[in-house]
Image 1: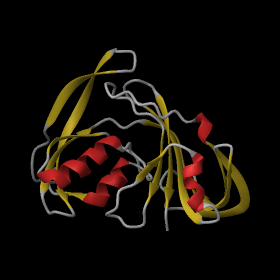
Image 2 (image 1 turned 60 degrees about the horizontal axis):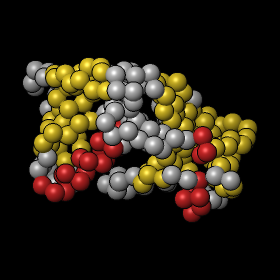
Image 3 (image 1 turned 90 degrees about the horizontal axis):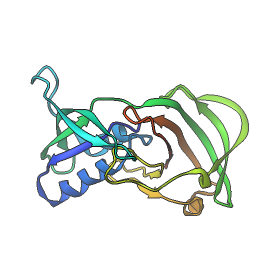
Length: 213
């Protein structure tokens, strides 16, 4: 779920431009991640066996302006809405996972930019496929600790909160405060709470994704 960076270099039509731009903005993740977000719109149409791997290298900068080299792998994918093929370049380096936890439960209340969530089931394996029943407990997501300031000139990604809709063809919605989730108070949802370290810069960032049922 969140989580390789995508650079889109060729798009066909206005619809593909808009969708591709979304993928460039979404970090991993999300849900839970970029790999999952991409699968909502695109399917890979060229396997490694069908064509030789094509790589390229680009010099990028961290938040302090220091240079480093990023390796990208060419991908040809098909837009599920239009059937058009799109050329993308995928960062080959995965971030370091600090934690990647999944919870099923209910949002009880939202106060002081904090989300109070009662956990019914959890999966701390990082996959979101092996939930275990646990004795109910409360976890508090303090949105005051999230940094949403992005640096467009840097490879670094800021923290993010995303609501993932039930319809796989709908795009996720970025949020910037706990109050924007008031509509989910009392609702049962799945949550992905993750923290990662950038492979190149060592920057730490957090993802908090809410999956609607």
